[in-house]
Image (cartoon, rainbow, N blue to C red; front, side, top):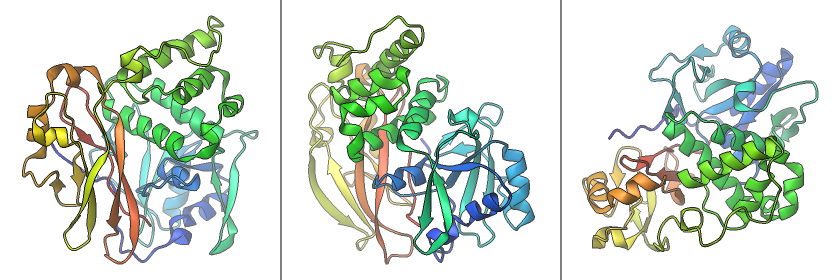
Length: 356
């Protein structure tokens, strides 16, 4: 299986003012837009790294032409990726451009396709940069961001498993790190058809799994049709598919090991994997050039030989771990976040990048 780190690695000289300079160009040309994906997560204090800069616009062709006129150049690299998910342009259209200073790859996405249409009534959080107060960067409000991610995940085509995992991961990040989402009352800010999703997450359902997605999709459709009443939890806690898909496996970290002169700290988990348990699931971590898991030269083969066919067929295996890493230039510590999942194939690593 191929591991691909999908991000544009600049020279390291840029900062937040450089990264978001694209917003000033769009503002000057009266182009409504909103920051999306990892940068929006960071705005809500999720400890993830940022990768490509994703921006929602109404018309990606028009926005791309505007940027090209002032020095952005098109990135024609294939395959076409959103995050680390390979996509078809006819299904998920987008435009990729590199900033004039070669620091950041900007990916323009159609706002309507990502369930966050930019209209005259769309509310955005305009955040001034400390280093450039005159530039107000537009972020989606928390409820609108979560609503859009939930709808995008539930409606993600079944043949885009990796993209589905990326979206599930980002939803999980928000619930794990944003205090407001731990309040039941936050449901009042969500669209009605997503409120049961919120209640079920707070009730302890394992998010990101295939059974959870199937369950929530049916509830969402029933709510839209007026055939369902909201409740504290939509399923019995005895339902192991929804509440305990890992069969009691422990996910406590065992220990930390410094690797390659402090370049990457790897949180090792799942001793069952090394012990050979049939139910063991291992996390593999990317060190920019290498995959490291318990010092194994072939961690994917080890995982594949340990995990039962039943478990590989049954679940995404949604979980994630936050790793400590250093940026590409060795002098700034940041958090790198990985989400790893399984679905009838080898474990998939979906993220890798540096914090700008």
